[in-house]
Image (cartoon, rainbow, N blue to C red; front, side):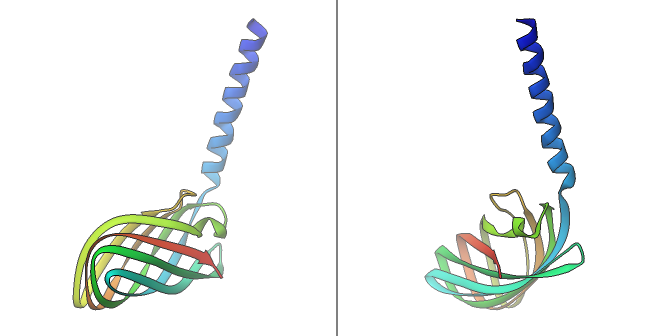
Length: 144
């Protein structure tokens, strides 16, 4: 009994250490995205951008669907930090957020999103166009 308890405790400690090790390896990068959005009730968005990570640039594609109260069209340029990534491909994934906003002409936007890999995007920028929305939005980012 004592030997199996010691082995179990060692396995728990090893698992905890491995979890801390991978979290310690996570780093930050810089992302810039340009998103074009249009819709009437159901909308779509698409665009692209760049991830700068460890001195290298990686192309990104972005797209998604919006549903709810959506109408208009806009172009949004977002820049900011991506955190909790180990490799560039950690940025790829589906990001979801509940949001509401209105932009007529120029409007400021700020958003924080998380994907299924734990990458966190903290973005700010300007939206140009006429777009009103009170929707649940999803954004998918892929590596080019």
